Image (cartoon, rainbow, N blue to C red; front, side, top):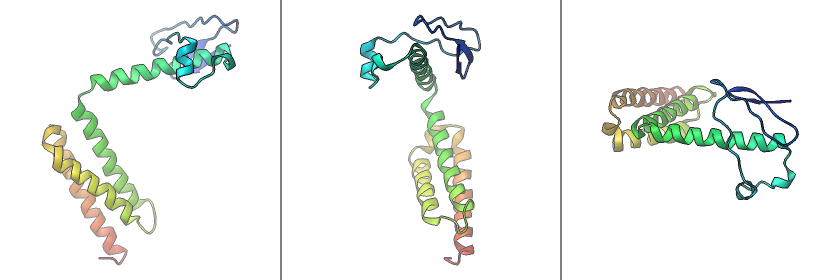
Length: 151
């Protein structure tokens, strides 16, 4: 029996003893969780099979790895990434439906504008890209509004 993880297949010992064979592609190593830790997560440890417990432990390890990556990434990079998400949201609201969802797009555009206005200069190299993205999506909004006869 094995357990699929994003890092590949991990052998699971059905006797209750976990025997993962981590390799370079295995991803984060599962951490052993006590019954108290599982209960704190809202999980009844008496209801888990060995396979489910191993899966829960692997998920906790993956979460810890994700948190470590976030902690190691400069905040400016993360904020710029989220700002681009607002740009993409506005663009989708303008183009993915007929008629365009103007009110929804406007909210995303205003959020992006507020972010760029408030902290844009602190985002380093991303500032210019975000400013251009904001200008482009604002223009797209005006064009969509005119095309919808709300000009």
